[in-house]
Length: 423
Image 1 (cartoon, helix red, strand yellow):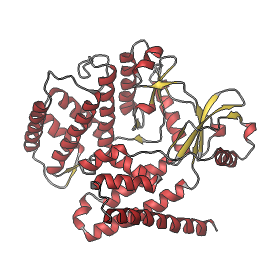
Image 2 (cartoon, rainbow, N blue to C red; image 1 turned 30 degrees about the vertical axis):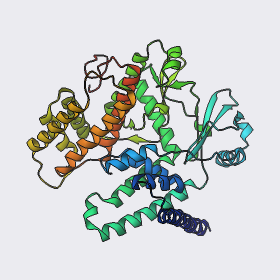
Image 3 (tube, one colour; image 1 turned 135 degrees about the horizontal axis):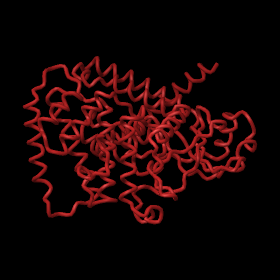
Image 4 (tube, rainbow, N blue to C red; image 1 turned 60 degrees about the vertical axis):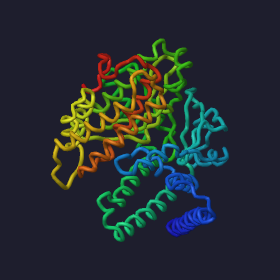
């Protein structure tokens, strides 16, 4: 019976998708014609969960998609209406299989946050601990699977019609998205990520960083109950001063913890935007939301580490050599030609940023994003194709670069001995 129901829901979902696409097409014919990247982003936001996540995937994958799309999808909003509290209570009760009052002393009916996949509520356990409950929205998994199968089929048809696209392997990209999104829907995986990261902090004797504790007796595949952290966002400079005497030291703790996880934890946090890094009341740095993590093979990390070292000292031959080891290619790449193109890119950049002009945080982020995309484009023009993990890693470096500009503008990241970037 459930297969039939899912089939009907799936058919209805494809109908919804076609209807939104049709409406976009009609508006376009009537003359409402924003630039293609913006039109696509707005359409994705109208289509909901899967396409919002797909938009965020595009935003964090400059190795896969054209620059103008990566830039536009930075604005992809993962904001969805709150579900009524009655629906949330029903989901929690079904998942726990027992009355709520046996587990929770109270649950705040007003959501702390609501995104396409889940909604978060503050609560208190009967044993007294303050917690947050992350509740998966009903039907999300079915919608994701229907949408992704629809996208996979469309990608295969496109590849057949236009074989030139197969090197970028659109169906391969959809498969990768499917893997990461279905992982995000499985809160048991996220709970495990939290425990693994907690063990990593314990094993490395790191008492300056923290990760929420998971309460397993009230967590399932669709609900996750975690310790509630009280603090402020890493970039809230005014509030941080009340929590941490030295914002620069707090930032160094966050960066050192993340760098250590690259080699000493089985994954790295792949979404260190400001909302996921908190400065807690006791001054520690809290890492939250482990729905998106990245894994990198030791030999790839060695090449990335060499790449960053080469960038620091402006060694273009070293950069080229590392990029060739990171990339996947079907042809022989001449390292000296690639190094020459990278050198020319840097010479152009020197002209772009005059030394005497003060550097704004927003400007810094834009510039580094552009540099990353330009470097990737140069690599691809030499026949290199980079794995998404490389883009995910560099994206986190860009976030940290931005935090340095906001919290510690005087700090030289490459020379500061307190930073264990590549050790």
